[in-house]
Image 1 (tube, rainbow, N blue to C red):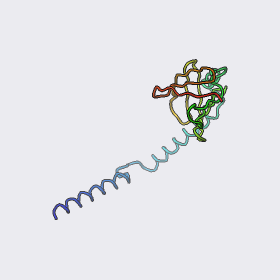
Image 2: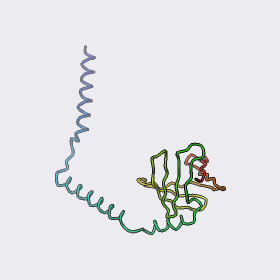
Image 3: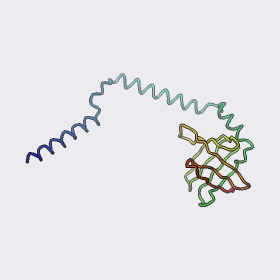
Image 4: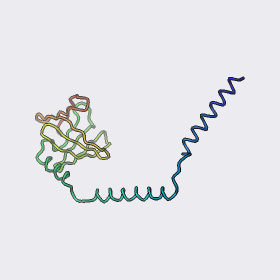
Length: 151
């Protein structure tokens, strides 16, 4: 009987601790602090939207310049399974279509490597590549060669 009481007491204490943590007890922010933080967040979001709408930046111009004349330009489909297609545009943008799920990216062609920045990603990824005729081989993040065929 004594074990049951200890067990029930322990469970009850855990529940109280969890509820206290979830409800944010001990948070001493007042309404003015919360309002100021909300305003600062809104201002930074407005700035981000404005910056996104600005004309082409120098980095975008460099990406476009490094994509012009690239042998990557065009569409490339995964050799082993249909439905995985990279499309590289001359303006430094592209898409990766994974069976109908399209992901947009920008890219820079560095000759034997490609730097790609997908939308909603913070940092670009760099992959080595080679082209032999109508075959594109990209070394993936695991170091494996993945082959694509020009469409």
